[in-house]
Amino acid sequence: MPRLIVPILVSAVIAFAPEAAAQREEFTLRAAVLDVVPLSTYSGTVTPVDADPRFALTVRIQSIAPALARFTTGVIVTFAVHSPTRSFGGASAKGKTYEFRLRREAADGKSGFSGLEVRP
Image 1 (cartoon, rainbow, N blue to C red):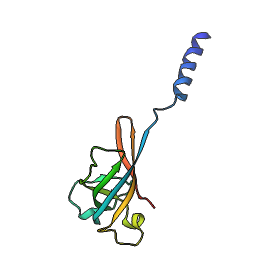
Image 2: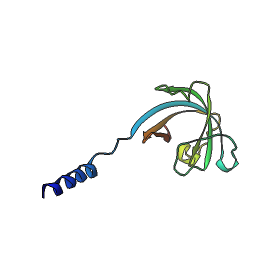
Image 3: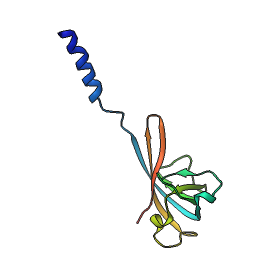
Image 4: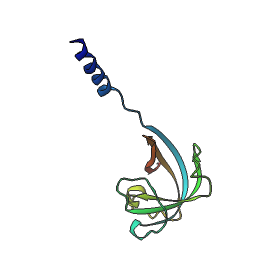
């Protein structure tokens, strides 16, 4: 009987062990919008920030806190976003500067960005 209990206990510990927690970071990004185009017409490299991207949002970074190597001052980056309406309402964003919140999650050795939002 004791031989049967040990495997059951080991199985229970493994089944209820917490998974490795995802690391989440949040960045405050100030950037000027250079262009917003449908993703289907964009031919460059994009940084996905949405599960259902449909537009390419190109910005020039003015500042970011905390520091992030890929997004230094003056760098131009294009984010793949769902829609400019979600981010900017009905207003044209091109040529304007915004403060964004950007999240990065890392889990299982992989990292990705999500939740690019205009801060109020």
